[in-house]
Length: 346
Image (tube, rainbow, N blue to C red; front, side, top):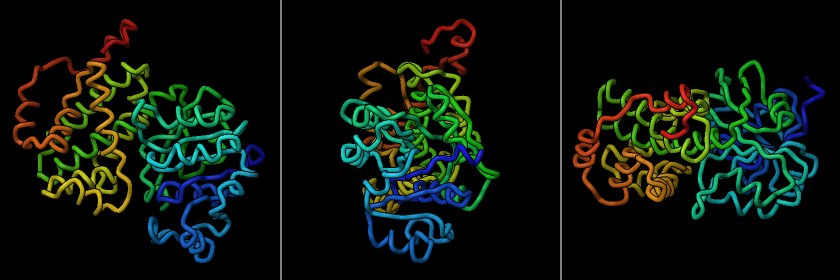
């Protein structure tokens, strides 16, 4: 498959962007990594290490790093976007014309407000000539960088783009599965961050295994209910980009959103919890957007409403938990009717 491997550019030098670029470079793909900080770029080029995000990982010497955005894109046929959601549109506005005809794959798990726009929709708006896909799944950057066996999903209706991504990213340690449900895969990646905050809080409080399991499975039901109301396929949430990503994000201390929740559960303020992390925790911003959207659409999301009440409305944790446990007891597997009858209403 070597002949199918396109020159690649990865935009974003955080933990995941650096990991993706390094994985592909180590398997002979021509990769350029773009980041803003010249000091970090110089360090990677000189010492083959990103001491801020992946200090214990030796980076492949074939990886090229630059701060020149347009030069980074010049020869690349595939572009992976690993840019925080807050800066996403700004970067796309600078490079939109450069992306015409190229495969552009977003790995950013966030939602833009106002407008409730997913990152791939921003790409379509700012780079209408690009072929757009999304990459999502249970992909903790540090584990991937260390060579742990991992699977991910490339979601796009363009089968050629899916094959191109599989060719450059697939390896003995990474399996890349394809999906046509771009919207569902991308929503799964964004929504699970909110529930990781809840899970982190629960872990800090020392809850039992039954409680943890209840939170994760009800989170899955809740995020599926919302996503299907937005047009996603519920079956997507039984795969890597749904339950797979939800499980790892809600259970691993490596998850940034879990870390924020854990700090909150220990009594820290939201501001201190985020500052202590030192990286972007997309779940905090997603929570605000998701709460507003679910209210507008009349979608029942008790976990989202409960977390929003704690973080932004000053309501006591005990009161919120009490309301959650006394709420109406509804169906367990809500989308079984979708599978049996084709009814997409949850």
